[in-house]
Length: 390
Image (cartoon, rainbow, N blue to C red):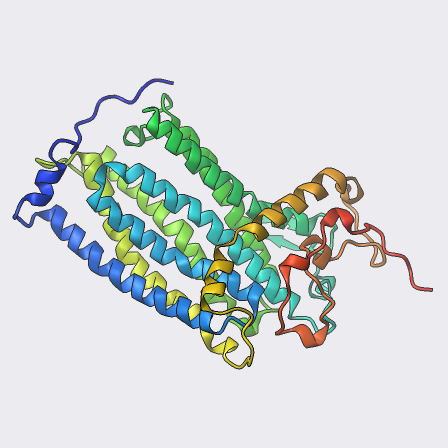
């Protein structure tokens, strides 16, 4: 793997570009990005404060806060790229890593919704009546939600993204520092960018497909939670910036995006991409304000944690680590019992709650109550067969 070819940079003229009193296209983009970022931050701050002040259903709102941070993270990082132009690659990798957090948080939020949608409090009830159905986008293939391996496959199709995406960002930062990342060279097989990009895109496709499959399966059970807006906001976060980057890269390769007197064509492309992201985050933050409305939590009289406690709780990644570790234990120790293509009978089938570590002891009364992820049992400690009642 060779070193990146030398490119003209702003390293010697970046400060003079900012010191210049002329308002060129670069400064106009910067001003638009700044205004949009400020609006996004204000809308996000309002959403976060609302949920933090009424932090009453911890395992739902912890995931909601993580999702709500996404527009602000994108807006702030994109705006900073204008002031520190040469660090664009590092900033963009931070955005990419947080995408994985958002997608995984949404999966865990859906799990919590489904956990509280059944009358008996047994989350397996939501899947027990599901019939064999066609795979989304692949109508020639069918799946049965009642099969033992189904819930584990769905879970890992999404959670693998929270491992691979940040890891890809870390490798990208190392390669950029070693001058072998070479994003400006596009899909040139001589450099690291193409390989990291292919791996992360494949990982993203698996994650989004698993999320789509699970959402379509349970959307009727959680209809009262208005899941469509929530789902679309997460889809928007991942798909739009990715497609946008591909389109801009294509335009640059066709010489439609050209260099200026002070900026290379790559830097012009990055600036346009950063400005568009800042514009999009305004729409996204407003969409999330509507989708994750605080009204459904305002009727509770008690708050689990205070404002700062809620923020710290949402920033604590231990529940992600626990989910990943517990699932790995299951794959290593419990996979033999779930091999094969037949159904497990009702008396020995692994329930949805066991696979997703959701505690159903709350019963029907717990539909709107707190389900503590911290008290989930490890899948390896759950017996694969349940004793029949006498």
